[in-house]
Amino acid sequence: MNPDGNDVIQTHHTRVNLDEIILAALEKAGQDVHCLTPEDLALID
Image (cartoon, rainbow, N blue to C red):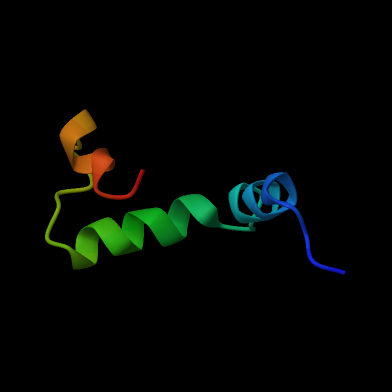
């Protein structure tokens, strides 16, 4: 059975440690994770 779009989104956003994964990706991209702006977060939104 293929999950519908809502299931895929819910699964993605309820992953364990999603915040840590996002912060690590931002650091790898050269962002200062202690001083993020909305523009910085737009990279991953």
